[in-house]
Length: 85
Image (cartoon, rainbow, N blue to C red; front, side, top):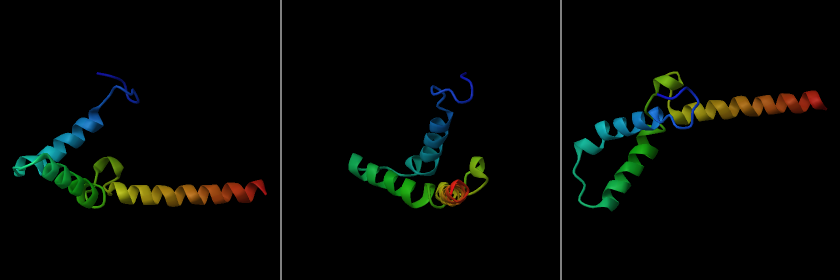
């Protein structure tokens, strides 16, 4: 087992693929790879990122986490500019 922050630790990826298989892949039979790729893309972009809440992110969606991060970052940059002037 690798330490936290080690680039060889793939627990996050394993957790994502476990969830993907549980919530999407095992519930359907895909006729072609193209259909499977399309459904997986739709799952990630239409449900997993915008709606599904993640305990690691404080029970908010990745999109909401990113939105809040960007707001916080832009406020910090604005304050830095005011102080340096």
